[in-house]
Image (cartoon, rainbow, N blue to C red):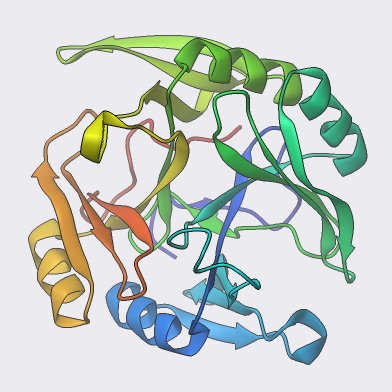
Length: 273
């Protein structure tokens, strides 16, 4: 494993973004795309778990790819879903509604892996909570080929910050550099995600969302590889406080960022206690 990797073999602390997953029409095609882009290998959990594929980097879990839910295409393009670690999914679900969020999927057991629920904050940012049983979530973050940044792009930054503080116990951090000041969600004084306003899309509309950045050693080479593999580039390269990034999509339309972190780790992007 690369030096500086955030490696975990036990449940992540409460409130930490601990996992990402996506449900797609063709998981096998997706695994081919991401495997060639990031060097992932895959473990098939079998029919009991809808043949969910766990992506591995250097034999450590980094993400899940599963089959599309009924009606998924009509509901819009697929998205990477950010999961937050919680000690008690039912208690977290109660906090979601008390803080003005909407529970989209009530807590349910996922076999022996864990307990899972899906919700939206008051600004419409969708996320999940994960109470680990045998499955702790990501076993490595912060390095090329793994998640290096979690970002909440919100129509109401204040509402999203207050919601996360109420549900997950985050404190709100303010950090400043030459590019300005931005907000972070902190645990024990360390940022686990950042929050900012969502950019307006076509027609001036803006949908709140959680965004995921995967690390790459060479952004220019990664963008060439994305297009060679049938994906697309919608934005960038753009320099930023965490490094140079670009917005891309896989061949099935799932958007994500690739962030150049070289051979090391992302700086202050998805640190965890």
